[in-house]
Length: 157
Image (cartoon, rainbow, N blue to C red):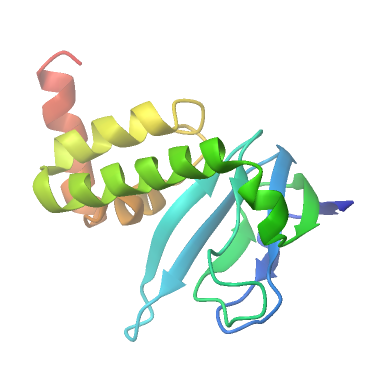
């Protein structure tokens, strides 16, 4: 375990790397994402203060996600340790449940409902994340997000 300070824009992990780490965010904001064959970034998750972010690949397997800093951040870097993680089954179950809900939300809801879900999941970062990244996270283009936010405001939410 070691604590590091990283600057906004710094990449902690690139897709294809081996021996990936677990990052516990003390201050700042990280994100994980993939890049498709057209060069489009697809945001998987955000990690504000108190959150943990990692690629779920096995410790010696190739990663699929990039992880970078959206703000200057202080993080605790941990080695992946499956035995340690087994001791935190409740936290892992909670994370898997959240991911399952997100997948179901992405395939079964409209843009307004997706944006509402984002606000509920990340209430403290809405103003800290650029709109195009929120759009990527909820699986819509920025124009659709803008229209959904306008419609939401008209509805009085």
